[in-house]
Length: 371
Image 1 (cartoon, rainbow, N blue to C red):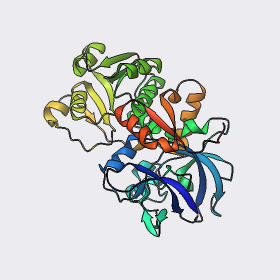
Image 2: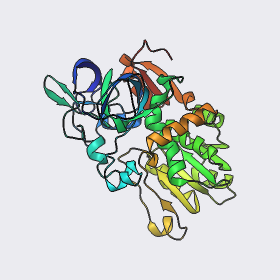
Image 3: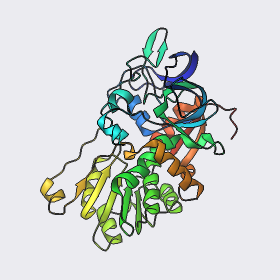
């Protein structure tokens, strides 16, 4: 089956929309999805420019939303016409998946970042040659085929164009708070970087009952949106020292929890110093940067923790419906971060994401879709 897709031909190349991509045949546990829209994530940019080891050419995109067209004979939970959000693939069979921890899947890298399907076959080809995929999904396409465990059924009364980023950015930020940090009501949380992931973490902190929810950035418009979405306080690092400002807002104690979404070395190192006694830092940006830690001065006497988190330690089939319910109740207004672009505007949308002009670009792949 020929489809249209946005292809990155080589490391650092722009996206090029091609209409001669061959989609793999469905297997027994596959669903074929007509793509309506897809968010653009900073992880897409990281792979486009080569921050991670990956094959080229590649079709990126991993925040897809669409409508099921066909299902394989072993598919149990979906039927044609279902609306779905796509997320990462967990094998379902390893010890961590069986414990309900698919983000820790022992086959995570092979299944999501190897560029091929879980069985090693090509997801996409062009002129008989493999085109690598992402997340066993590649949502920058008009149609894709994914495993049943890639998909989450969502209500048909919601606008599919808005929902795709729930599959990565929003579930990563919120899941880091809900599933990993689990802040106690009355505790304090700070979030460095108020992009889509950071704002999701911030809203999750508010929902969790944090007494202080501190948004940290250097863009006044983003800090204003953070206040609108529930931040109790904001810090502009162009005007204030991060550590001093956090301490001033917490009676000199520091923040109990900090989520860093910037990946900037200086910011992460300052965040460690801004933690309270026994505080926890979750650095979750996709970055090749390093930080310098003195285990005695930075961690041990103050009993501080730095914890790695992948995809918000989420189970998408549980976490995404929960976020949708929070959205319905007006507690998780993620759509206020989004801006729509047409599919052929993908390079502009990605540039606007990189520059910070747009918090969460969403590509409208099917312009005829009506919610």
